[in-house]
Image (tube, rainbow, N blue to C red):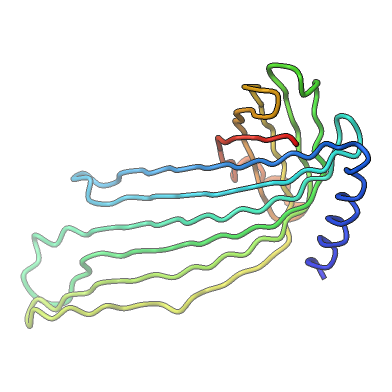
Amino acid sequence: MIKKTLIKYFILSFITSLSFGMTELDLDFNYNKNILGSNRESFDRTRTYAGSLTFYFLTYTGIEFNIAHSENEIYGKYDNSGVSSGLVIQNETTNIETRSYGIGIRQAFSSRKSFIQPLLSLGWSHQEYTLKSRTLVTDLDTSTDYLIESQEDKTKYSAMFAAFALKFRLTRFISLKGSVKTVFRAFEFEEARDQLSYNAGISWIF
């Protein structure tokens, strides 16, 4: 149902945009790595790739389609230096993969000819989460390692998104863009401030 609706809006927006001749393509990337532990033995690393296509049906207003893919890896290593027998956990790894597909309205607040152009996007999103983990356990009495892997846990739900961006014009058609975005469960507005992500990328107008 969601895919059929997105396709209908995509076709309608594309036909409408032909009258105005303005389409905007954005590509964004985010990388974040936090080192954890007293000996810097653990980490929390996230990579996010995102893109959006906006068809403008008015000078400053358009319909935005966006897609994003995020990979979050959390690695924790345990200090077992004080243990000489029995079972111990050596390390744990948790992988969280997120996919989102969204449709919304994008509003520009200045001409595309301006050096700085503020943008605001609001809309609906479909979220898909996949979580899996691995734990390495060692039997110190026999020096045997056991790798315990969990089954994939998949979750899907409807969400809302809001994004504010600033574009800095480089040429007539290309701009650098920085943005802050939040994606949260539909109508759970109190979650919005806890789900912020910061991205940088490039924008093309054609």
